[in-house]
Image 1 (cartoon, helix red, strand yellow):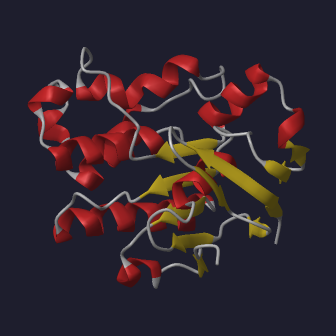
Image 2: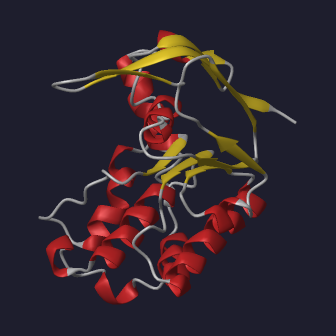
Length: 222
C-alpha cells in the first residue's frame, strides 16, 4: 500500500482570549491511500484542529508533515491552494455556503479554480452526486432558503465534486436524519471503493465510526 500521510505533531497550541491549551501532544499518524479512518474523542481534544492540519489549513504547530511525499511546511502558498482545491475535499462544519449564489453554483464553485484537466467535468458526474444525496429540488435555491440538513448535504456535495484523493469530513452527518445520514455514508464509501479515495472523518457517532477501517481515539491530556 502507498503511504500518503505521515504526520508527527509534537504539540499544537490553541489560544483564545483567556486560555492557552496544549493539544495533540506527541501525536503520530500514518495513512495509506484508500483507507477509511474515523477520528473520535470528546470535545476539545483537537479533532477539528487535526483535520485542519491534515488539510493544510493550519501550519501553526510544532511537528513534521509529509503529504504525497512532499514536506507540507515547504509548500508555497500557491501550491497549498492548488492542493486544497484538487487533492483534498473538505466537508467541514465551518464551510460556509455563499448566500448570494444558488446551491448549484455553490457546489460547482471548486471548478472555477481547477486546472485544465479537472475542468473536463462531466455534467453526468454532477447529477450522480446530486441524485445520490437527493438535493436536486434545491439546486436553484439560495442557502438562506434551505434547511440546515439541506445545506449540510450541499456542503458535502461541494467537498466531493472534484473527486479528490483525500476527503476530510467533520461531523458530516450531525444535522441529518437517519435516511440522509445513510446517503452520505454510502456515497463516501462508494467513492472509497471506486476511486480509492482516502476518507478521514471526525464523528461522535460510534456506530458510524465502527464502519471505518480504523478508529483514531484522541484523549484529553492528563
